[in-house]
Image (cartoon, rainbow over all chains, first blue to last red; front, side, top):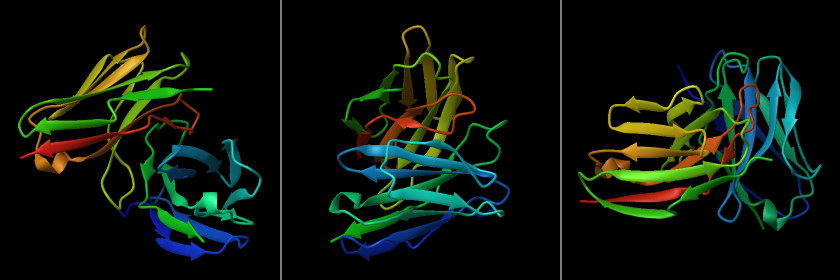
Length: 114
Length: 112
């Protein structure tokens, strides 16, 4: 079974631009969570989607948004990019949060904002 | 909200020896504690986890222990090998909540 895939793997953007990152969960998994990883703040939870609904949200500004499609694939969008948004963005999938705890991570998208 | 502290931040161990990484959590509602291994250029890989109704869990050379009263849990790696070198993260959450709160990570180096 294929793991979590994320595209693109690397991205360079300029301040003020917006960016969309994509995540395909493990086949059959219905929940997708997004995390930001930086050297200074570590791994921080952004949001979680299940059945196309955002169920949980971390402490990030409204510039960070996401969505989930009917096939469980998810995208996250960051608008008006700032230098501090440079990070590794990770998504993780869970089979069914009602019965399963385990979250499996993808390789991440490395975003650099210049 | 939940706060997870992890120690040490770096750990060097001779190949074949054991390594122990410790974490404490603050929210008594947390009942799920996974450990992740992250190698350079890769995403975190789930290596073992424990639920609060269990005190210890073992998988070959890796074991995790949980003390609910003291709110701390530990990762034990025995007979360490060079491929164990990586950054290890502990995390905590509660069932039904997909938000994992992570520790700050431990960079483990195995010295051949």
